[in-house]
Image 1 (cartoon, rainbow, N blue to C red):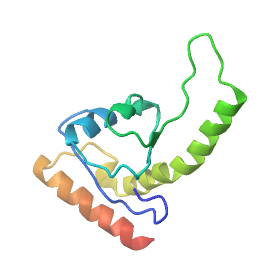
Image 2 (cartoon, rainbow, N blue to C red):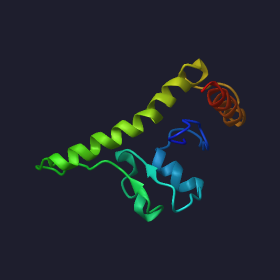
Image 3 (cartoon, rainbow, N blue to C red):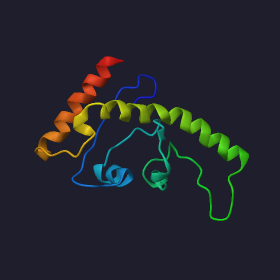
Length: 122
């Protein structure tokens, strides 16, 4: 998703349950090195695949985050919330809120059509 325009740029899909980071690795999506990726804690280890990324600081067992780390996490969260709001908007289309029971081949086509509708709205 583009941070400025809030438009969905690229989508990727897989069969069944699959973690987002695992999907990213298997999709072999090539991203320009100047583009910054903002992820959540599920993307720990992203440095191996894309150097220009930012994920929140993770609390270590038995330790606390410093005030500076908490501040950085809060700033990242303020930027990432636009992505979460976009997911919520997409789930307003009930086809994405419930288990998909139609032909799997057409799911990507349908999702991309609804993404295009979302992009036209803003």
